[in-house]
Every structure is written in C-alpha cells, then in structure tokens.
Image (cartoon, rainbow, N blue to C red):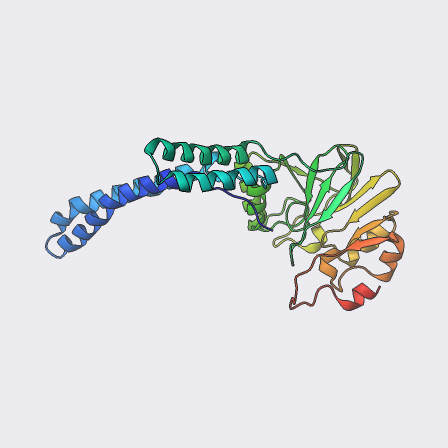
Length: 321
C-alpha cells in the first residue's frame, strides 16, 4: 500500500541544517586538530561544535512535531492532476523568460499544489450499503469498513483490532483515527509503544471485551472475544485477538482476527452464522475446523496471506474445507 506524503518542511529544515553545518563541521575539525596540541585550545571549538549539533538535532526534532511537516493529501482528481502538469510545464517554460513571468509560473505551480492538498476529492461510497474491503497487505491483515452513512473504520487483527505490533505506529500516522479499539491491555512493549503513539496523535484508546457492542453509523458491532477476566500476556497471543460480528439487515460478517481453535470452540455455541467470514490467522491449520465452518456457514470468505511465505499460508487443507 502506498501512502501519499509530502515533505512540506524539508526545504526550511535543509536551509537551517546547512547553515548550522557550516559552523559545526569547521569547528569539529578544528577541535580535533587542536586536541593534538592542547586540550584547552580545543575546548572552545569543541564547545561551539557541541552547541551547534544540539541546536541542529533539537530543531529537527521540533519540526517533526508539527502536523504541517507530515501532510498526507488524498490522490488528486484527474482535473487537478492535469492542472498541476500544465502548471509545471508553464513554470519550466516561463523560467527562461522575464523575471515576472517566471514568478507567475512558480505561483501557478504553487497554487496547483495547494489545491491538491486543500481540496481533497469527495469520498466514494454508496449510501445505504455496508462495504467491507480487504486490503492487499501480504502477510498482514487489514479490512476497510465503510458504513451506509459514509463513516470509515479500519479493522486489523495485527494491531488496530487485535494484537499490537510496532509497525502500526505507521498506520496511526497515516490514517489518523479518532479512536483505537483494542481487546486486552497487553503488557508487551509493542502495545505500550502503540498506546504512546496513539496518545501522541490524540487518538482515544477504547478496550472492548466479549459481550460488549458499539455502534458505527447504523451498524451494530458485537464483540465476541476476548472474554472478561482474560489477562493480557507478554508477548501477546493469537487467542487474545478481537473477534467482531457485524450484522446489517439480512447480512452479517464475522471477523475472527488470529483466533485459534480454542476460541472457535467457544464461538460455535454462540450462533456465529454469517454470510462473510474473514479467514483467521492467514489460513493457518491452527484455525477453522470443520465444526466451526459448519456453525458459521459462510457464503463468502476472504483471506490475507503473503506470496511464497515460508508457512505456506493459506494452507491447502484449510482452503479445501
């Protein structure tokens, strides 16, 4: 998956870094050279180099905290793309003409860039329809849910909807969710890091356990796992994955995360019948017994697995069931 990112602060950051480097590098070289003669002679240039380095790294860290330094515009519409290409071509042509025309070309290019960032295309969704899209994440696992009202929910059993791995710090930075649903408060370093990253972006963490339900638009989401009283482990285990059931009118979807047969046996007694089943654990043999599949009786199933993976997911015997 490709995320659109713009380095809006790269130019001012580089101007500052280069200016400081012009002080830092000579001072550092002078300090090293004078250290062979006298420590006291090397003290002053070393001090200058140290302070220059501190200001340089501190400034970069400060810039990274600005939201403007991490702008992620949506894909441009065809109209904006054509305007941007035209503006870029005119800027190249006018750059060789008079100064005023050159500035007009740059202004047109800047205006097209601002238009792409500030006027995102309208979200494409069908009113009154619950959409569930499986993203191609290889050996990862991600589903995009769009409610009939156009609200979007990112469901992922590897962090945003179940176990937590540090690679989902990137997911939070890209998707900027308002809330982060999770199962157990795991003591694992990965979950602690994920929670800290969510807090840094102002994301509200909300744990959910079996028996609870919450609403997104007109969709009532039921939580079937983890069960109350279950303690989070370190490292997090597959059985701790959130299991969700999404009924909508006369259809439903069952999302089992990375659950194994032990969790499936519990689900079998709770009427898990659903039209759509998200195959658990990438189609591993640890999931989806014949009894569980008979209880769910899905019409459709979706599985996410990496190509040529060493575990050979999805397993052929699971697919035959």
